[in-house]
Length: 122
Image 1 (cartoon, rainbow, N blue to C red):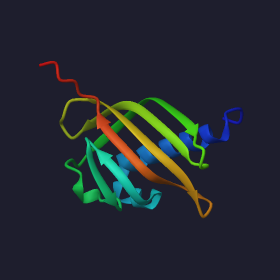
Image 2 (image 1 turned 90 degrees about the vertical axis):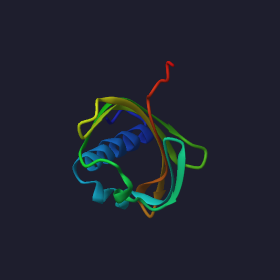
Image 3 (image 1 turned 180 degrees about the horizontal axis):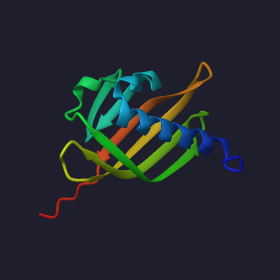
Image 4 (image 1 turned 30 degrees about the vertical axis):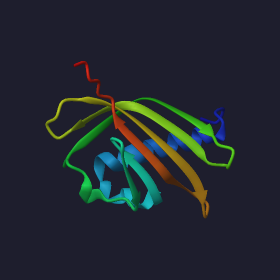
């Protein structure tokens, strides 16, 4: 990873850490968020991470692609595309974007947008 720009290294490390925590111990996710804006399926939630609001018990993510860019205010914008399997539901595609900010020498998530890749063909 040494030849990649620093924002790609930080973004990739964050994505790997985030989904590992999400899949194995969601109770730890609160430590990587600050007071955030979280958008899940077009519903905006502000405040702190709430594990109890998730409608499943088991989940596994598979990351297909990720992109990272520096922002003018020294943050990092990360976009992730992948698939997930929750409980006994079928595998579904998803998109997720994060804004990462360095606060007190730690990179934390200030904004998180998530959407299932569902299509309405009707």
